[in-house]
Amino acid sequence: MGDMLQVVRREVKMGFRNPWAYSFLILFCVFSLSLLIINSQNFVAGYSGTTGSMLNLILYLLPLMTLFLGSFSLTSEKEEGSWQLLSTYPIGTMSFIVGKYLGLSVVLMTIVTFGYGLMGLLSGWLDSPLDVMTYLLFLVFSCGLVLLFLTIAMFIGSLSKNRWQALTISVSVWFFAVIGWPTLLISVLGLMPYQWVKPLLTLLTFINPAELVRLFVVIKLGGGSILGPEYYQWVNWAQPSSGSWIFMGICLLWIACSIVAVYVIWERGRSRG
Image (cartoon, rainbow, N blue to C red; front, side, top):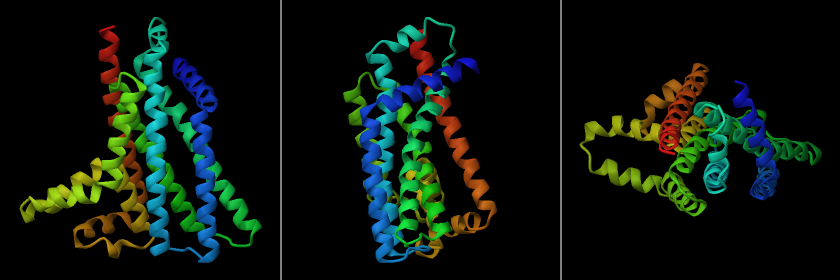
């Protein structure tokens, strides 16, 4: 536990010294203010065309930001020789991986909460208050994207040999998970027999954290009817209050499995020197 906390402190210090973090902080603050302007022109509550557009904008920015910061953090340990030095000390690989994840989570969640906090303060000052439930669901949406995509970023960082390779893989993953996902989904499901469509759709949704979090928030905002009959079961379990706990359990399982996969890759590299 002590080793893990030391890694967390080190990662937080390095994260807030990273100019990329402040660049993304400024970008996210500008983005949050843009959402505030949209709200001042048209009061945002529940699911509508405006909230759908806002969700898509967040979906474009946060995963890419998380993939960059997370993957670069791990590849820098290899390039700069920090991990070679740390591996000579009696520190467990799992403590190192979990510490890196928690430290990066603190940095990224600080960026997200600062942006939303600024948006909330200015909305009150400008007398254009946001709908509280919609505001909280947007915050949940952003935090969920950060925490889930951070595990993917660490997986990319553990496989990449340098920052350029991590950059290439991160952009590719972001493109297929966010931009190209509808096209990929339609093309794959179009080749399958009809009785396979729903089970495969569920499986693919759990694989893609962007789609998983987006569907949950859209249903909670009251937009489940636009998803179509294939997602009827999703609406049934996600809409009640118990759906929030089920969603949290799914996310925790997703994070735990991903960290174990990163641990296996990192430990294999450590044993090989």
